[in-house]
Image (cartoon, rainbow, N blue to C red; front, side, top):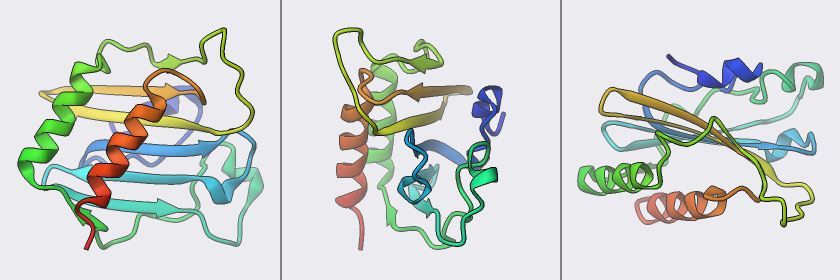
Length: 152
């Protein structure tokens, strides 16, 4: 399975080589806010974003109009990558429902859907975290800190 989001009618372009993939897709239809990252088993982190010109008709089903950059933006050491994937596993991502909604007592205006794909130990999980959903911000912060610590 290379892109489990297709069941939702969205092609995020999840690379087959990704052990971790994160996409942020604007819920307000702002394509310049869409961003995505993936980590290979080697620890190489690649980044992709949209750039003009934009074809708004296509962006609803394929929210990214440019490929990932060829050069990695960071390299995560093996032990840290393993620790990050173990942390994700401990959060129950492999038992998580495919879609995580906002808790009923939380009001959210705008934001991004976070699509997460994790491949570990022969298993694949794909989760769509809606704005305000549990785990969404924690995952983004943890991932961001990991990548930032290893950027050149």
